[in-house]
Length: 125
Image 1: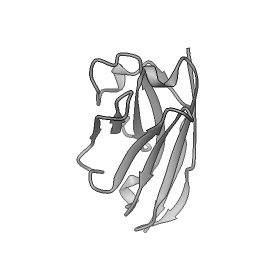
Image 2: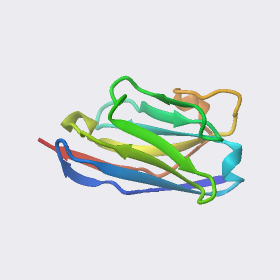
Image 3: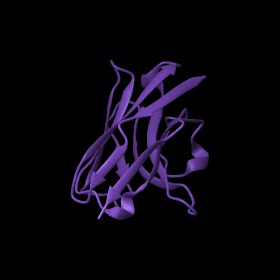
Image 4: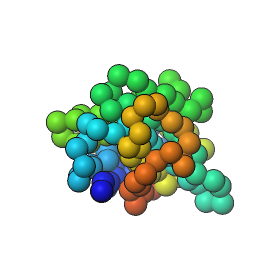
């Protein structure tokens, strides 16, 4: 079992920055890959970024590449999403997720086994 708790969401103006955190507990944190997804009202859940269990491999959605950075601190059981140059279209509930299959990093929600409750990010224009 893995428990995930996101924090760091809020309201920010366009062009601003936020850093999301996701604290994990339960199974050894360094034994699984982590991802961030987001879901805007009326839309499907969308992949944002993923990072491998050692933090060596990362992968981003084209829409956030160059603006967002995913990282992890295995000593603190935490994964981060640094979001810069935020745009109104980044407004969504952001979820972190754990993928117990470490053989590959995935951008598919169905590949993830555990999810946090989400944190709201609102970007005003």
